[in-house]
Image 1 (cartoon, helix red, strand yellow):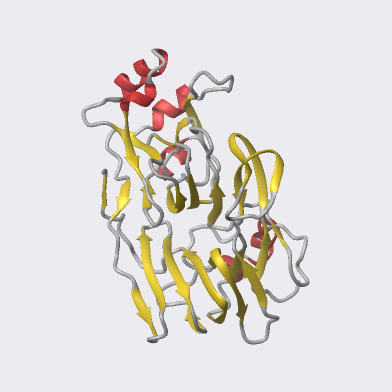
Image 2 (cartoon, helix red, strand yellow):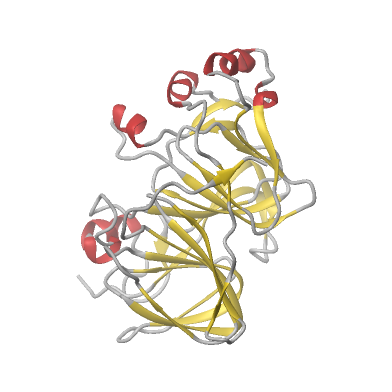
Length: 331
């Protein structure tokens, strides 16, 4: 078993009926079928660089355990966070994911709380998030059978730079016109509740069971960016929760990163603009560019990043200390 190092992940493109043929500006290529998602750190995602190239993240998590995932995640043999880009060209189905308690009731290891960073948005882009005030689970079930479920959702306009927290149990959907960077618990448990008449299976029994009428979901209160070293570089906390912390960086000069306090965690960097080279002592440097993800194993506690000449990226990890759910609002 070789030594761990910063892992450049190969994007896994997932066809979806609501996706796009053209994934620009993130990926400068066109596809022959509609792509809805680009998975970056899923269990089946493959390493591109170094001696571990061709290994899946699931294999490496089983082999290296805490060396890779860190002490902060609950499970020692499963990579804790799934990150991906979403490219909706049509409305997604209205769906819900269970929280931890509801997932474990049916034998799943964890629920699926997630967050959406809006990397790009056309004017008028919207998301559906949660049930309108005073709407009950029974009201919503009736609306599904009456083919009008989307009328009972909170529809929120989104702009580039917004961060949305989607707690487990929240009824939700994405409308067209945005590109989303999603960070979530490593689960693909999705219950489809309503699909605008498309001929796809619904999961009403399980989905209605896990719906929360008043979930703590919404736009996260934005934090002001912080300047780094007086160089024009900036860092901004996007969201912190018990499941993940997500930060945004804009680098115009080299910067050194430390793992921070508390229990250790693997870190994930996802580039949304530009390119940069990541280096850690004793390991080969890794270049990554827009659309790429690099996983920094938990046992690497310090690394340097050189922008080329500028790079913007999202950094996600499992918090090493106790964190409450974020302050949100429905606008």
